[in-house]
Structures are given as C-alpha cells and as structure tokens.
Length: 114
Length: 145
Image (cartoon, rainbow over all chains, first blue to last red):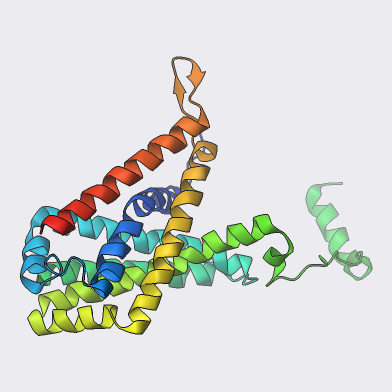
C-alpha cells in the first residue's frame, strides 16, 4: 500500500474532530456561558481551578484537548482558505501549522506554570 | 514520437493553445449557491471558533499560573458582554460541528462485524450516547467542585 506523509495531519484532524465534538460544547458551556449566570462559581474559583489543573492527569487531558483543537482547526482553516479562493496552499499550510505548533508549545508552558 | 518530443512540439505550439475554460462561478462566494454548500461552509467556519476558543483557554491557563488576581481578570474578561457573545457563538458552532461530524462518521468509516456492515444509524447513535455521557460527566464534575 502506498504510504502517505499526510497520515500525521490527517490523524490529528480526525482524532481532533471526534474529541472536540464530544467535549467542546460542554467545555464552552462550563467555562464561558455558566459563569455569566453565576453557575459553577465554586468550580471556577482560583483555589479549585489551580488544584484541579495542578493534577497531572488533568494537565495531560487538557494538553490533549487543546493540542487536538489547534491542529484540527489548522487543518480545517487550510481547507477553508482554499474554499474562499486562496490558492497559495503551501504558504497557508505553513502559517497555520506553525501557529498550531506554537500554540501547542504555549499550552505546555502554561500547564507547567500551574 | 517519444513523450519528450511530444511535449517539446506542444510547447512550440504554445501560441495556438485553446482558450482555457473559466468557471462561471465566484471563487469567494460559490457556497451561497446551494443550501448544501452553505451547511458545509457553516461547519468549516466553526473551526475558526475552535481556534479562538483554544487561544482563550491557553491564555486562561497562563492567567491561572500567575495567581488569583490574574485568574479573576480572565474570568471577568470571559463574562464581559463580548466574552459572553463569543461563548454563545462558539457554543452554537461547537454543536454544529458535533452534529455534522457524527453524521459524517459512518461515511468515513465502514465497520464490519460478523461479516455484516454495522448500520450507519447505530454508529451515529453510539456517538450521541457518548456525547451525552461525556457532557453529563463534566457538568457533574463542575457542579460537585
């Protein structure tokens, strides 16, 4: 069978799409919409959150979710650029995947600081 | 004639090549011509909100690492009118992504079990069950904390 160098971005895209579909709506609800109406104020307090994110398993899970979100979005935005008539695919891919790599690195640093 | 010689003679005739076909549709708004394309584009644009939300989360983690005041600042930003507006849009787009993604799973992945193809609706149904369980779990986790 022919081997393709596209396997890695494709895997990150597919895994990302599935994980994000499961977790993102509830995550956006808890971190974005609920605090607006005063829900989950205990869970989102500094003490609870720093303890929660201080856990190594949670760090790994958050890293997985954010990294997959970044690579999934980068891959899809690349397709989006094509759909909006931008044909410089190599440049677009380079910029988007670089941003995703940068964001992944930033996530690791941010998690290590908590 | 070898293929190289053929190419060379074609290059010489470059001036007489036929007029190229130009598609009579817009490169930038073609998706507005059909509701199916509009749905496709709506799903594609959801990735922009995913990217922005990921950045907001990363900033939040940095703020969390910088102490209680910084974390409170992040919470205030998230609950500002612009923050709420973004969260609302991102929430809607995340649901558009989830439903569109689940719908596409059986088309992307054919599962065989006991020599039979697992029906697509069953695969989609399982995804919805997992979605509900994951969401409920996170809500309980946030509610208990």
